[in-house]
Length: 207
Image 1 (tube, rainbow, N blue to C red):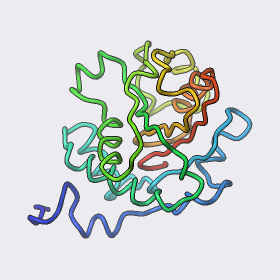
Image 2: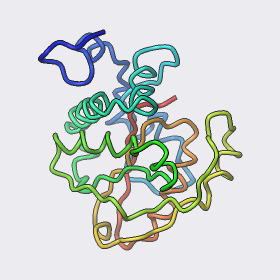
Image 3: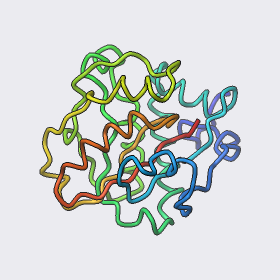
């Protein structure tokens, strides 16, 4: 559907019909439960439910595979607007996209999660951290893997790089979709080595 002049990236009907989760103030929400007993988190949530044949899938597909940065930026703005009234995320002062391997970035041209973060930063005062965490192993697609295979796929994929903007801060780790949580869990295990860090998770969708 063509956008009206006043619309940015996502048409108004699509924005209004997004299947929002309203998870943000619930410490027992399904996203947070993915990590219970595995890693220490301050909080975790997702903006929408992933609908395999609906608007969320189309928006994320446009962002991830069609280079539609405008849709990603608008989705990021909506994510930030949706979460900013939650007391559980109020102390977040750093935003970090789940990193892609440098070869994947060269292939795709960008990290879709960084586009989401860029949109979020238009709404929040949180600082973006680009190089606190590096993806050092280029892993195969997670799409058709079960939880155990996903975890094996990414368990050594990340390493700390520049922690100067992480120590003593509440870092919000941002990704497009959470399914089993294996990739995010791997990131969190590594980030937990930073002194006095608090870590939360927020994704555009949960499947």
